[in-house]
Image 1 (cartoon, rainbow, N blue to C red):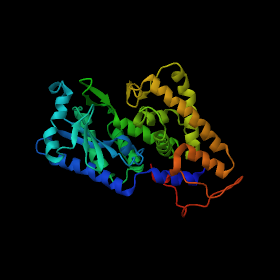
Image 2: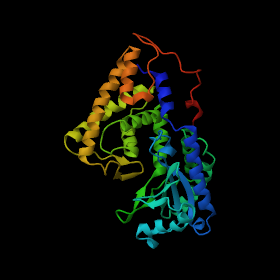
Image 3: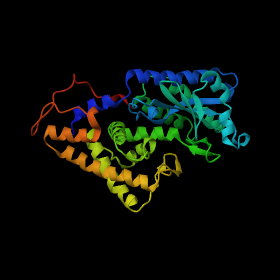
Image 4: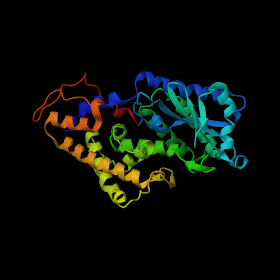
Length: 362
C-alpha cells in the first residue's frame, strides 16, 4: 500500500518544527544584516543567498544532539589573483566574526562554521564573478529576500521563475559556476548552488511535487542505518535525484522505485570495488561521490538493496497492518502505527483533509 495518509504524517514528524525554523531564519537574516552593515566588508559583497538542504527544502529535523544546518553563500568582489592562497580570503572575514560571533566560529575546509547555539551556519565565500554575473546575482539577492518566509518548496520555484525571466532579458547570459576556497587543496574550486536549486525545482515538478518528499524520507531512512559516515547529505540527495523516476504520484511509490533503481544501477560498482562518477549540476567535471571510499559505498549499496526489498513488500501488500509495519521497519517510530487493518483495510484520517499545495507553484 502507498499509505499516503501515513506518509503525510511521517513527513510532518521529520520536518523542522516551527521553533527551529524560526531559529534558522533569524540566524541567516542576522548574519546577512550584519554583513551588509559592516563598513569594511560590505563594499566587497555582491550578494548573499542560501544554499544547501535548507534552501532546497530537503532538510529534515536534526537529531537532539545536533544543530540545524544553514548554508549562506557570500558572493564577493575578492579577486583570486589577489588571494592565490584561498584561506587568506576567508581570513578577511575573521575580524567581523570575532566581533559578532566571538568564540563560536572556525575555519573549515570550504567554509567558515558558526555555532549560534541553535543553528549551525556555514558561511561560504566566493571569489569575484564577472560584472554581468554580479549584476544578475545582485538582483537575485533582492528577489530571494522576498521569499525568506517560505523555504519549504515555493521559494525554490519562484526563484527559478526569476532566473528564467533573467535569461529572457539577457539571452546571452548563461548561469556560471561560482568559485569557492578549498583550504585542503589550497586552491579555488567551482561550485554551482544556483544550478542545484534549479535542477531540484525542475525535478520536483517532473515528479508531481513528490521528489522533495522522497528525498526527505530517504534522508531519514539513511540516518537510521548503522553505516559508515558517507554517503549522506548532498551526495545522498544527488543519488536519489539520479534514480528517482519522473511522474511518480505518491511518496511510497517514489521511495520504492528510487531504492530499486539505485540497487540496480549502483550494485555493479559496489561489487567491483569502485565508486561511480555522478557529475554535479553545473560543474560536469566534479564527481559528487568523489570523496567516498569504495568500501563505504559498498556498505551503503548493501543497505539500499535490503531497503528496496522491504519497500517493495510494503508497497505491494494489500494488508494495512502489514504494509504500515514494513514502512515502519524502514523509517522507524516517526512513521505512524496502523490504525486499522485487514485486507483492503484503511486508516482513519489523522485530521481534516486539506488541498494539495502543489498547484501553488509555477
